[in-house]
Length: 266
Ligand code: ADP
Image (cartoon, rainbow, N blue to C red; front, side, top):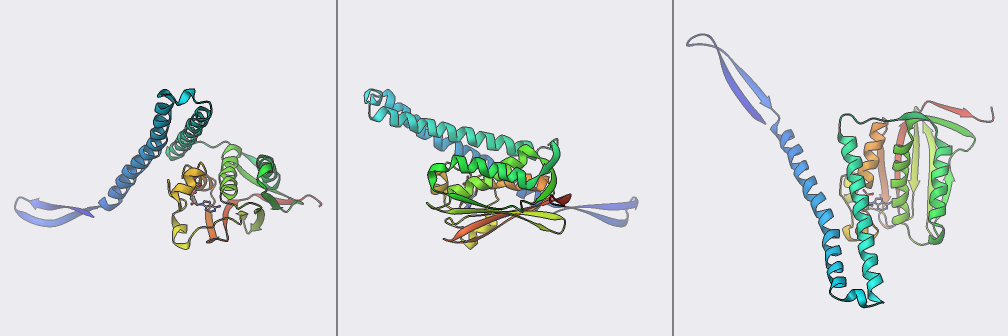
């Protein structure tokens, strides 16, 4: 806390009062510190793949390019690193857009069960070879209409579902459910994966936070997926939370205010 004192003088020499202006410098310092940390994180996240690409390219230039066995492998590594950098830059752009004041949303009516079903189907196709199965509990008889931005909500579900897939074991099941609680609809994605230790849970929505850095990197993570998810949910007037048992699985849930539930059979 920073205090500025000014003495108020009625007439020269005669003290009449004292004004104290208190500035919350701790808040300013915290924001500044967060910004510094963010820039350091971004630099580090970009330097890691760049350094790795540089050494693979050097090895190729030094002759590995003529080794028909090694060359394709080295080129593949540089491709993977490039893809990860593109993902990272895309995630950063998305976050910076959401941080800016002129952030606009293209809000339309969305029938949530149907919308989710399409996204889950896309994941089922993409993970066909990974022996992961998806279960749905989407109250299929009911239309649940929310007002939201289709692209943003797609991204939200993509981020949560891709984590569920990434951290699931072979043969794992991912349960996608949807229920109504008062004026909110609650979506939950439950996996049977590695889980998150209790002490790490409060931080998983922080930018660049990862429980296991090496594992996340190997799986192609940027550490920004849940931070973006949180921004999207907040922009829709909802909230997002996690419950997890270390070693047994994780459930990510979010709520969205909803307009109406119409029973299709009525
Ligand atoms: P990442 O790109 O590393 O997956 P996220 O922001 O999406 O970053 O998630 C942050 C961290 O939260 C992850 O690194 C991981 O440690 C943990 N996490 C997220 N989802 C799950 C999940 N379904 N199961 C286990 N851990 C998870």
